[in-house]
Amino acid sequence: VFSTWGFGTGWIDMSLVILIVMTFMGPIINLRRLKSILAATNAETSSVPSSNLMEKVKDRTLWSSVIIMTMLAIGILFLMTVKPAMLGSLVVVMISIVLGFIVANLLLSRVSRS
Image (cartoon, rainbow, N blue to C red):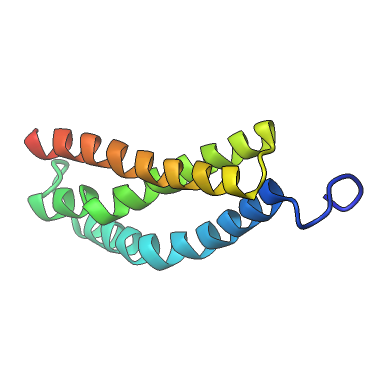
């Protein structure tokens, strides 16, 4: 960044913003839910998971967050490859978020039926 591109380049700025947002998004959204799963797992006495534990593992917010952050990471890789201007970078981020919601809903609806 410093030697070749510099800040002020759309794809670099957008990638850095996404990384910073994901750095906070993970702990704020996921940490409490993951600690809850750990506590429920440690409280288990049977080898078969309880319905309480399974409910915590299937948390929609947790999985939506994980899938959206995965799509954003893929979006960053796309930005690094294609190197679009700021408008193109914004479009890529929006598409990544929308795809994240779509994939999360598809997977979570499939899990809730089973």
